[in-house]
Length: 605
Length: 34
Image (cartoon, rainbow over all chains, first blue to last red; front, side, top):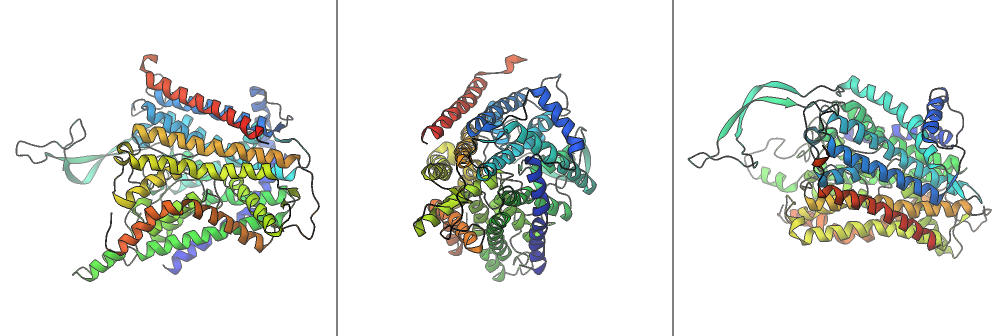
């Protein structure tokens, strides 16, 4: 680990901290329908949208109507995306200069579920599968609205806490539109232009063909994708003299990919691709964009509930968990693989790369190095982003375990746009409930009594998450249709499958790598897991919000557990870790922990 | 053009619709356990 690496980690956290108050305050004004400086530009657009869609912006919804609107909106959007992928090759549809074929049904289902749920898991190579039309109208559209829907849900939950003796928690359509127009649109416009200035491409050109400076030889592949052998039994070699360089409207999708914590790359290499993430500055900007809105939500929580210190207490819990994760990942990656270091010391190879003087660089972009790869991996899995600038599969067992643990904690360390906040609020309710049990009083949260129904719904949210992950993982590692897609054997292969389902259910979308997910089983099961992970957790969460909104405000007494100080922060961290650790420790033991122990004994996979 | 659609499309679209119908039932369940 280097001082430079630590400086970059703390600088990122500092900038995120500095933006939390202004952005969070702005968000509370937007969703509270107070006047903002963007009103002259956005209000007319908002009015036109409501007129076109017949939305009554003064109408308030109870939690059931709010949830119904979300379900219908998501269902229709998902079907439209599925159909668009299937028909993208139709000649009269625009923006398909590479004449890409329609997406296969199972893959189209997986992708539609993935982008509708803000997961953005990709079982395909974007530049050879999706037309520009599908990328822009289908996938980028979902990047926007799935993020806006997440923000709407978090705001609805916060309103449930803030309101007293009311049945309603807002209007889903209004929250969706205001989140899109006031928050995502201006930030994306500025961010996309900054990315373009750094070299991120933005065009509708066909792919470029360039002559290679240094042609190379490669085995010729047959129609079945396997190497063709000559009469002598040796592979027939061909000389490659040209390279196809993919183009496209990348910057506009890249910025919402980060700001909306979506994560689906325009290119297969995601944020390791120089057209998506060309400079150290864009790397920093992308990590900042991933964290900005989730972090700002903590201030929005404090402001809308009239308890700013509570918002900062939640922020502190998130920041401490973030630092714990990045420290472990950075330490593990900077340390490298001890087997390689030992082997190099016992041989004639004493070069700095052989003894891993710069840490474990396998699967990492050299221009980002170990610190920025470990930091990016932590940021993207703390949130529900899923963008990657390195291959998590190539991390050391303990380094790779950190992204996995972040996902298993339900991505509440800043979390997804909106999703992180409402996920954390469920843990807050559990923390308050546990504190109430410890002192023998009815638990209260910001003046609202937490009762049996709230805890039942919170437990539903907590239990569905591991249930879906563990059941699908168990099925996948028991049968050939699951194990045949694994690239590695033993605990590493198990980690690949466990990571895939955890990423899907947590709506993260980052891939550990190594798993060939484009199979009928994984397309269908991962797609289903994403849908269950999104909607089966959102509905009980909204039920809690609706129930809290109806409650009376109870004045705080000496026996009320304060949710504004360090004690609350520590308790919240404890609950998040204990729930995650207890639930997933056996699975982690079979995966990265066992792999680490075997590595120390000299066995790798 | 529409001939390119196949039985798998019917299955996946059916599964999608079914999922969202189940979500509505789940919504009712969350209200009912109150």
